[in-house]
Image 1: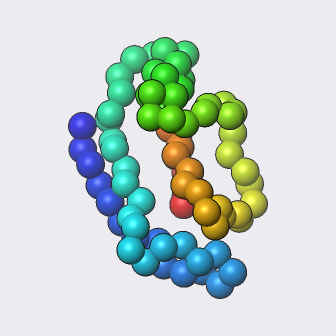
Image 2: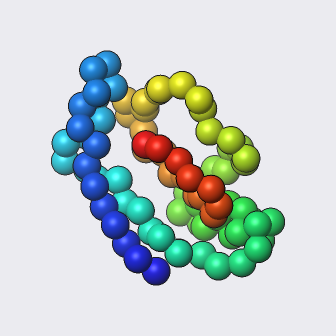
Length: 80
């Protein structure tokens, strides 16, 4: 597993956070597509999260002013 982190700078109306980084765990889980989705959901639930959806992310900009967001990707690419 490779751990990477980076900060997202302010982007107009999206404030981001200059102190808390995005943490990216490359290769954290292994398995096939269905198994990985289940593993991500179990991992998030084990840390108090709730898996609210699969197979898509919003295609518009948004942010959470008083919460965090955890995303699990096992194929493809994304832009933050």
